Amino acid sequence: MALLSVADALERVLVQAEPLPAEEVPLAEADGRVLAYDLKARRTQPPADVSAMDGYAVRAADVANTPVRLKVIGEVAAGRPFSAALGPGEAARIFTGGVLPQAADAIVIQEHTTRDGDFVEVQKPANKGRHVRQQGLDFRAGDKLLARGHRLTPRDLQLAAGMNHPLVPVHRRPKLALFATGDELVPPGSEPGPGQIVYSNGFALAALVRHEGVELIDLGLVADKLDDTISTIRQARVLGADILVTTGGASVGEYDFVQAAFAKEGMALSFWKVAMRPGRPLMHGRLGAMAALGLPGNPVSSYVCAFLFLVPLIRRLCGRADLTVPGETAALGCDLAANDERADYLRATLIEGSDRPIATPFPTQDSSMMAPLAKADCLVIREPHAPAAKAGSYCTIVRLTR
Image 1 (tube, rainbow, N blue to C red):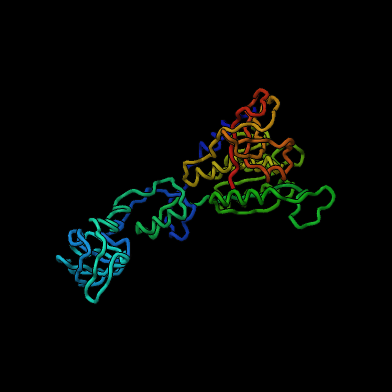
Image 2: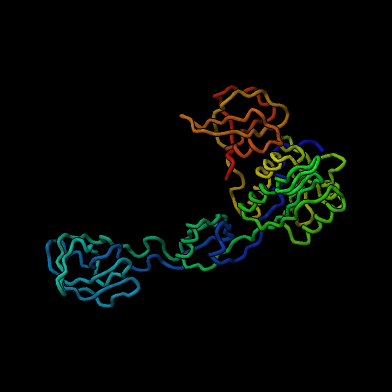
């Protein structure tokens, strides 16, 4: 199968992916979830004219000329409205959030008054509407304030609560099953034997996908055996995974069984091998309703492919519109040689320049090197057959989130 471009591969990953069905969840469980429907206000906020300050509710006409002495006929606190209307020469003691009495149209703050028993002396005028939060200042019933496809933030939850929504309609979280293959892999904290290495890919992938809002099913490490690989794939299907992600075993070696296992299970292969570096042996297909993504085993390849392909897939299933991290222009911090037929995604540091950010790729870009990836701020994108580029010339980057 010929190498696909990155753009064509991403299109194939997304073409059959649709947002998952909606469900209603309590506000306390909705942070980071994606709205399945527009959300409209169920009430007006504030529901009436209320005071923005502690002081006295007055008729602006009565305090146009000061000092003036007014009779205090009552008190208004938040949640305890005052039923009577103000007459000429009258005022009501009021506290922040209190509903203005009828005929009152201004607030005199308490610092501009002197209380004397049942009377208050107002020392400074207050124009009509002064320190009054008018009905509907924030929003009105029926206003669409949160749109379908929006990922809810803590501020949005505050707004939704104020709109009087105890539950919000969001897309179901995707279930993502993850396993790694490799007889050479041992868990962190182990003492690796001859030829063994410490397993690391899954920890980065798990953190990445959890941040995107998935329900993770960690199926652990799987031996380099066809039957074991098939059994684990079946387990993912039984558990109802929407996405199955494997790392390692997707190449062409005699101990790489992932593709063979997928074939045995009847996977409709979409592609295998992409014209990119790192990440050439990337595999994608479907097993019924479950999307499958076979990531390379090298740590950098695994992460970069997940960042470029898996994250957009998750976002599509979650109902988001912002599927990819937008590219931006930066200046190169070093010279780069001409590129070959594959797109390069170079790990780079990023500093702010006078005109635009300066991106400096690490001198060694081996796909096994985790330390440069951890230090990287962005990926510098080099298109296939890009000519040599000098330091200071423009390049395209994507920032590595989190």
